[in-house]
Image 1 (cartoon, rainbow, N blue to C red):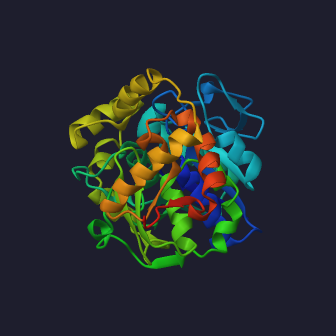
Image 2: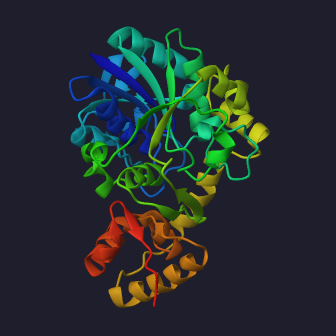
Length: 364
């Protein structure tokens, strides 16, 4: 049997989709994960999502949908985690192209459903910002989720919306979505995380990293992103909830506004109108700033004292954990140095590594 899982926001949602497929359906079912090629600037220096023309060696599934096999490569300077995910995880990764707006995404979904005839269709969002109304002050990246929600609501096939790890993306506090969350479908365990444990050694997703950490029993408060957003890690964090799809659309004003869009620029314009900004504008501005930054030599004698100062400040904010992305940006390092920094810290202070997070010590 074939299961179709739509990764609502791309990035780490695609990794979580592979984990959830194994947890819910077992290894006997084949998974097709439909996802954006929309990685953080840590991976892809170009703002916004990639389209099929940005890759070599894609494989056509339908006239409207391409898969990303292990041999595919993003065309420089673009970057993408999808080929490596395809090499390491037992799933077919199919590419969502949002440059045709919600109308184009609906067409892509419909053609894929007709081709593979899946036993089930799940729309998965880690964190739950797909339930945002659009005016929440902590909301940072509503556009990708709104596009997939708008498309799935127009599909002539049953779609189950799943929210994993309520609040773990730092964009919508769990209490803001409590009324929308339906029954718990599954509570992730340490055993469930085994299928993606090696992927999280290199993949920069923070929300999925927190989901895995909480499934392994980590509790506390984790600082994420460049802004240092505090995210509570609780017993509720590793749960997966079913959510009524129509109710989600009623809540999400941006998704309703972009239902009839036929290109990404039009959808972006609605995001600026409804939410007051576009996440791609933020990426454009940040990319210019990153490109002007000079790489720093990662000398332990320099980095470790800087880490001590960061941890001391984080403790005063109540943080017990953080991510390597957060440390990289807090130390004003280049995103390309994230993996090197991670290896340096683990080698020098292995007891603080609670995979995939970094534990902030109590201090002296």
